[in-house]
Structures are given as C-alpha cells and as structure tokens.
Image 1 (cartoon, each protein chain N blue to C red):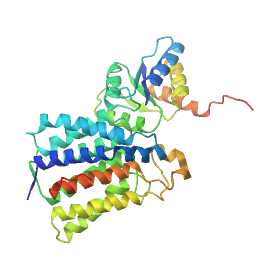
Image 2: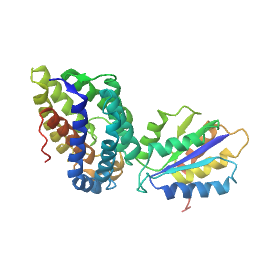
Image 3: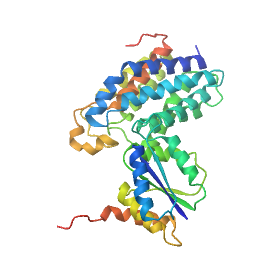
Length: 130
Length: 215
C-alpha cells in the first residue's frame, strides 16, 4: 500500500487537500496532512512533516506532494531523519497531483513508481479546452 | 585566545538580538521578492534557540550548534529554516566533541555550514541567496588568516565581506526560492537571506572582538 503526505505552508490547505482527495479514494489510501507551523503561522515544519511520515510508517512507500518553496527543503530535511519506507517528493502541482496519485494508489498492486508517475501526469492536465 | 562554548552561546544570543533588531527590515526585504516572513521567522527561531541553550550549556560546542540547527529547523517555517538549520547542524558535526576552537576550526565550521546550505538549497554563487553573503565571507576569512591576521580581525573582514555580498545581490536575478518566480522583477531588490547571513556573521565578529553593541 502507498501513502500520501500532503505538505503545504497552510495547515488548512493541507487538510483541505486531504479531505478532497480522501473523498475520491474512499478512505482506501492513507493520506496525512502536514501543513503550517506550530503557532498557526504560514510555513512548513520539519517536525510536523516528520510526524506525518511516522504516521505512514506501515505503508510500502510514501509520495510527498508539496506546494512551493520551503516545502521541498523541509521534506528533504525531514527525510534525513526518517528511517521508514521509501519516500519520493513529487514535482506535480499539489491538488491535481494528489488527486491523480490517490486514484492510482487505490489500484491493487500500486507501487510508489506508478503512483509517482500518475501524479506527474497532473502537469499535462488540460482543464479548459480552447 | 581559544573559542569556548561560552563564546558560542554568546554569539547565538548576539545573533538573536541583531536579527530581532532588524526583524522589520528583513521582513520588508522579503515582502518585495518573497512572502514577507523572513524577519519574523528567523526572530522566532532564534528566540527558540535561546530558550533551548541553557539545557546544553555544559555540553561541547558541536552539541550546542547541532541543537541550534535542530531548533531552527523545527521553528522557522520558511526556506531559511531547513537552510540555516542544516548549516548549524553541519557546523556542529564538524566540531563534534570539541570544547575549544582555534581560527582554523572556525573557518572549517563555516565551510561545513556553507556546504550544508549548498547541498540543501542547490544554490550557486550569483543566484541571489544567502550563499552570496557566506561564500565571500569565507574567502575573506581564509585570506585574512593566511595573511597572518588574528581571528578577531579576520572575522571583522569576513563580516564586512558578507555585508558587501548582501548588497551585491541587489542587481542579481533570483534563481532559487520564491523570489525566482518573479523572474526579472527580482532584480533591484536586496536578498533577505543574504542580508540575515551578513547579520549573523556580524554577530560572530562582534562576539570574538567582545563588542556587544547591537547596531
């Protein structure tokens, strides 16, 4: 089983993505939100990300979906201390990438590679046809 | 005069005071090309470091610096958290179990810090980041030490080079971080990360020359 870690500067944005994506995956995919910093400010917290990774420790692989800037650096810093299953950080846009990753992760036999590839397809997603 | 753990904790408290005094300036610089939180983030992180220091005051210098890095990483929300956090952790690893330092150790620790920032941020010189203050400071420190200057004077030279380096980021095009999303519009603004790095190096120079005035 593959898990998703949703990392955003905003705790509410991360929880919103978790809620939105959790709905389409019908609760079959472990999704953890790790947004914001401790005093409620905007930012990413290595500690919160590490806690999120620990919550996903029992899965076979974790795809981290991030918003911008320090989200990547914070996940990379947390990974230096994490000893659990393999983790990949996705280059996909947060919402669309998490959505496609969750859809893929509901498949029996989904691997981290397949879920990561599905998320990346979000970069080519066309929303408005002209 | 060797550098002791008391110097290191003093340096951290001077750095915290300097960043606090310049908090609004750093935030204003960040508002121009980032997300307007650099001063507040760093101020919060260094305040947390000062609160944590008494617990490690009797430990070696490496432990104090590693604790500083881990505290920054968990309290500073922006990119500067992982970057400064990694810098302090790497400096601490370079000085593991040490209770006294000479000039060479200080230079090695700063080089380890720079390596950490480069490894984490993947930034090169000239990309409008804290590397543009720290790298020239280390060059200046190395040159001054090689010329036979004492550490306190060499650190003054290094701090001045960091300040010059921060000013030199103004015409640069940002290639990393949130500022890079602005493209050409990042030109003409001083980089907040390079600026805070210059303040931290000034704190180091002030500590070693025993000047505690916060300007």
